[in-house]
Image 1 (spheres, rainbow, N blue to C red):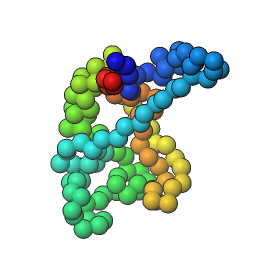
Image 2 (tube, one colour):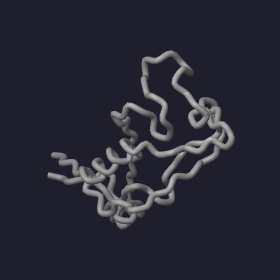
Image 3 (spheres, rainbow, N blue to C red):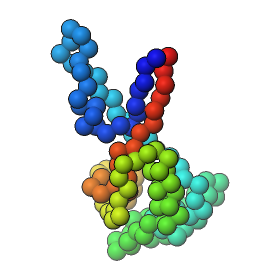
Length: 132
């Protein structure tokens, strides 16, 4: 039986031993996206409804208007903390920060994406996958 850990910290993966006779080691990282079951959007007070007509549940924050500052949805943060506990995260931050990652992408008209790259809500979680 082989035990694999998905979502383990990269530093552990970098210590992976190369396969016999090879100068290379396999390092596999996953980026996982999840849609939280919140009634409101993540960074504003607008309702979230996938079946609403296009562009009807928007505000200045959603549209990226200058000066419109996002505010984290407390329900989404609480669900993130619960997910961190479920993933056995070794560190859940007391203080987090959100940053704007600016880049051009055709379906991103506001030109930025909100990220927690520097100070994420939680770190070092894992999912153990048992493979035969």
